[in-house]
Length: 192
Image (cartoon, rainbow, N blue to C red; front, side, top):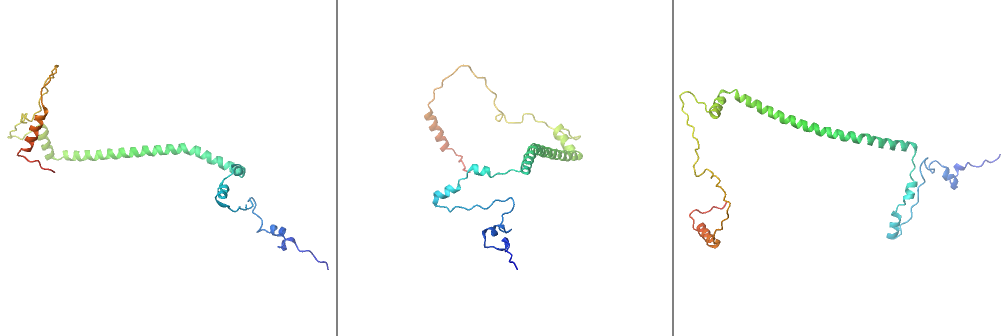
């Protein structure tokens, strides 16, 4: 009886067999994990943080599906941004029109109340007396014209002369007279 050799997947001791097992193989389309270097002090940490743009850019792989999806996103943004601006503008106009409708409805309500007041005979009588000076038969009305005190009436503007006049005045005695008259007055000022 001849002895058969064991299949390579059954012997996990060999490195080749370990790589061929399904658990050890990387998934299709994924990259093998990179090993990280140990950080050596602050200088080593700063060096590890730097990103090489060429390495980063070379890592970008665009498939046809990615290009199509990216172009659809750009096209959607190009179409939707003006539409969104129009939508916001129309919403603002609608809000302004709703506000003007509310103001108009308030004015209509006030005018309806005024109309209801004019349906009241007592209100009509009061308005006729106050506005049109109507009186009932037998009543005597006295209208007083210029019933203000003449001192309370404003003075008329006097004509301004074209010539300049210099008046002699000493301000110091005037100030002292004002202070003494204010201090000796009978009415005391009440501080609030």
